[in-house]
Amino acid sequence: MVVANSRDDLAFFPNELDFAKIKRGATPTTHMTVTYPAKARVQVTGAKCDNDHIDVKLLELARGTTERSYRISATVRADIPQGELHTYVELATNNPAMPCLRVPLHVEVEPAPPHIEKMRTIPRAERGRLINLFPLPAPRKALRP
Image (cartoon, rainbow, N blue to C red; front, side, top):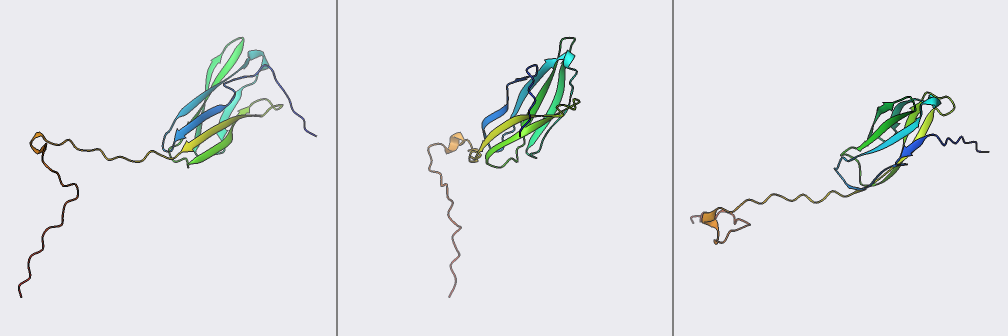
């Protein structure tokens, strides 16, 4: 038997933390806003992700008389491996009826672009001349018999 509690007064915008496709080595950040009526007396007390490649921060945006809102920020670390990651960000609350809210997080990490060496500018005096890209080894000295 499954038991679930549903609340229509909690609002998540957007409804998930989705990075879509990123290049390996990139460190993008995505945000989500959680809003609920102040009368609910719920506080988000913490945010964490069980994956070491995702850093999560929680910031209280507003504490008004009608509503409270928080910003959850998730940042991908540069050392994340290539591939697809589906995980959750867990939001801890002070409400024993719902001590933890789980927000889906998705990221697809593509291979890093190949490293391209910066080419040097050819000085004006050398322009038009043939340039040997692969220098030949120095000539050997002849051996005396």
